Image 1 (cartoon, rainbow, N blue to C red):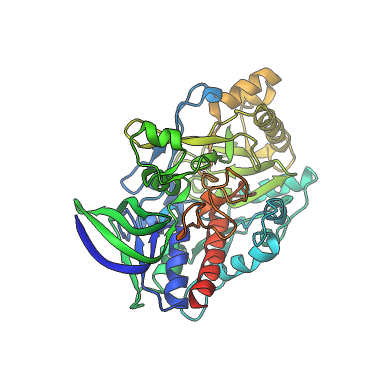
Image 2: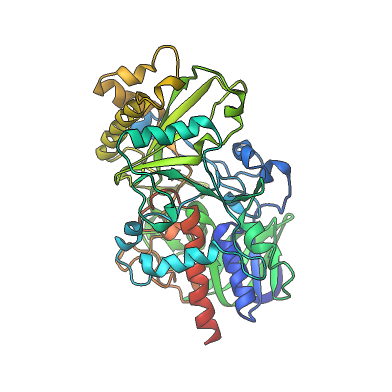
Length: 483
């Protein structure tokens, strides 16, 4: 095992949060910054093309996590894709950018993390500075007529049109902003790492999978990783910043002896900090879709981002129109997800110490009831004057089913929106993993700064909050380091 020079900051994970931290620390301080990313630095058309985002799932660029069998989903195993490349999941997601509702953040009740504090962090990410850092985004405007019909259907059903989801009041229907510009995806790599690539105090190392943190007392003194079949340890003089996501960040803490003491002992890991909340509070936006046969096939529907508009119906449901799944454009779907699911699960470590997400889908009966209500909402929208002409033939069976049949449909068809969060929860109670300053409890120089710290998932999806958390963390760290 080799030992190399020390860095002031070592960042683990090259996705949204890690890219922000690397850029802001390298440009805002004189610190020596190292970013470690397990996946490759890769430029390919399948990444850059916004219409091909789903084609990366299940490839070598996907961690391709699988849940444990979910009892309330008929024991189905659900695939949870996560990006394994520079840019992380921002290089393979659907690019939708929604900050969330202001009430999401205010309800946490955590000093420094309310909407008033976080809105400037969002704004920093949404503007391009003189170095080229930040996002150029595109606001969808209903390029496909089916999408425009969906917006009209929601308005016909009594929901207001929301001209700008950025304002933080989401109830109603509107068009999304997406992290794409001039037909090209804008990933975290594009928006944050490329502009900082020439900084002499920033080193980005890909193909480097971190295996543990080297802990002495309450401090991490090194980070061990494997690259090219060789183990290396890099020294840390100031802080380690975990930005490996809702699976990766708690998993690395656990492998380093920071987690529930009983499970650490069972798997033969030396305990450094008994932190029972590590891996707990795992949750996700659960969703389902209903497929319709199009009255008039449209091949453009298979290529268009039909899901470029969304309806936030009250505090519980998010509804959108999905693209055709065949090249001839013979189908479309209406999908509904829960914005604030009640179900909670955890990360489970197997005997070989590998992590398996167990989101506990529908473990709260309230989620089953709410999704069944969501199907009713789809029924109402499908029969509006705006949408009814779009589908032909017999209506999908679930549209005319009784409540018990609908509940069975939910269990058979519901699944992930790819929004795992919450496993290193921020707070001040005994199960919190990080304090409001994002430091891991029991360790003096380790912070987590990704969506694993979210106490509760936000409305609309975690991409924008991931950037905001990291922007907020970077500002805090820069002030402390420079002070």
